[in-house]
Image (tube, rainbow, N blue to C red; front, top):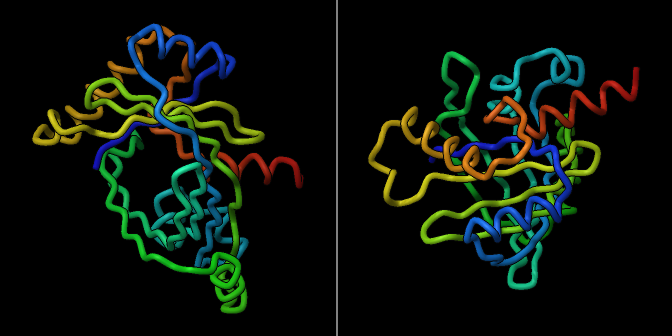
Length: 195
């Protein structure tokens, strides 16, 4: 699965208006509560690169919306290109029934909790293209698009370029990183506050 995630420097309402003007229809909103645990100790967590950190981490994820209440353990295996862009991701999910017990179990095992945040998601759709507008406290607004059926046979780099073109066509003030790593950004942001 190839996806892009880019920061948007505008108000949520303006972004939503641009999407609607471009023919995207609002589908639903839901929240992801993500808590990341790593086998690395706290010092290593703060001093390793993103891929090493994610490769050694599990996510306790709770997705809640009007039409969903999903509890999973998630492991993500990412492939990065030479520029650090995530061009491929394989997600392994395991359904669980108790978020708090999972967190308690990982803490009891001595795993390091290095990120705990909520993604507020607003999903928009136009044909087969689904755009998720995400808001994360203390980080801001992001746009995420995953590959869709008609491009799934293209190379990872081609898919990344196509998804990037779709977002750029919205004419929004965007960041230059189309592979934002929100948990890592959050870790570094909270690290700044502790210094």
